[in-house]
Length: 102
Image (tube, rainbow, N blue to C red; front, side, top):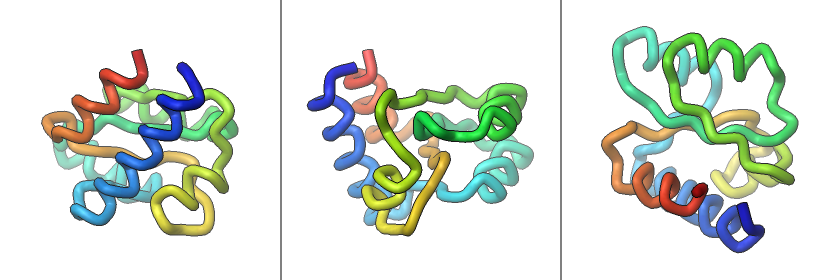
């Protein structure tokens, strides 16, 4: 993934938060997955292996962005730091992020 694509993904995540489509925090993400919601997760490179394993075992598509730290992911969505954020699978933001992460 190019640095330009990673920057565009971070911009899209900020827009998704303002559109109230972004699910932030591992507890909220895992709660939504347990309730049957289909999500696409974006994780920082330094995300804990436990969180990644739990997300993958819950059948969540996870994209780890190379070179992305917790602090920069958190700054993109307007919080201090974030290991993982998620979007509904049917969202337009999700389709655009999928295109950029190829």
